[in-house]
Length: 253
Image (cartoon, rainbow, N blue to C red; front, side):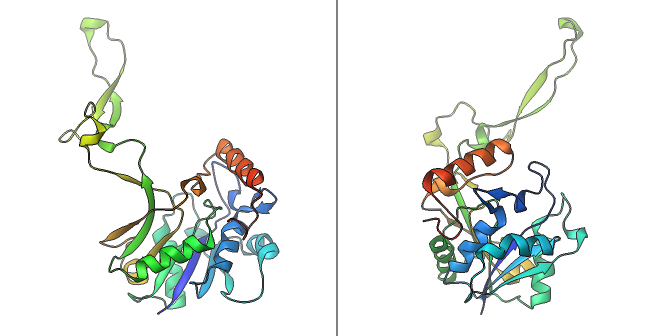
């Protein structure tokens, strides 16, 4: 049985160029989550999967300290580092090379874009999955909007009677269970994945899934740590939060 952390860290990024290697409050983004992983007590090893190994080693150098868990930078092929590459083949490639594939082998998915994860929360998520029969544990928070209240959009039908003016037609996302005007208290609770820290049993990744048949909810204890880094506005908010609280990699607590 092993517990490993995998940090996907490709060079490219459209929303924020070279995002994973860009300094956030003085440290490369990838260094934040790697420092937290280095201080977690539940991990046997940490692997950074990247198509830019030299940049990754340079970015991680300020936070590398002796001792366990060891951290290795693993080169991935450029075919696994495109904008449209999903997580699954990246993880399958790495786990195949490592020979990690058992039910009791846990893979902790840590994203550079969740820089404020705490070592204690990594350990808590691992312990949570180890003591349950679920195939994975996914960090999620209550969703701000219920999917049964949502619409998709499509071009409205032409109408000569009203001058043929174009408009966008709203179509219930789920026409059989649409509840746009229903009180929220009558709707089942729904959760939105936040990518803070996830754990998956390795055998399910080997067999083609990043979560398996039974996904356990693991709710982060401090929601304000769950940031999104999709554009420059997100980046500015995250950097301001880090500076306001005096956070540094490995000291986010």
